[in-house]
Image 1: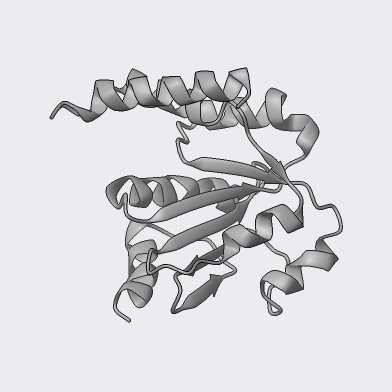
Image 2 (image 1 turned 60 degrees about the horizontal axis):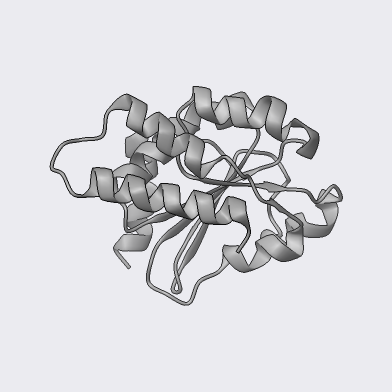
Length: 178
């Protein structure tokens, strides 16, 4: 393990002990610190590295959302995705940023901090989108936001933004109720 990974792991453990052993809700500053800790290192994946995260052998529901900071509908739905994941810790949320790798430190990390995004974010660095979009879903035009909701029994694809929390919950219930 690298020194940074050990430090991040230690920070996560300390935060877990500090806030997991109390009935109080974490303060806003605690949430911000969790965001900073989680998204301090944003992994950069090529498609081959990302692809295994798009499938599961378990009943656990996964949400994978492809988005970018420059996409207004993407930014608008991020709070709904985050709130749903916060209220449903049994669901795994992965936010796949399609922003430029050169902007991670100067734009992406500040954006995540400013918007209190505390879910796992990875950056997909696969410039030839035509080579991987069809592998994800042949009917996907490449427009974002694009969301996959799945478990080991069912997969649903959404080439649209979720308008509100109820809209997202309604779609997730299509997997839960099967």
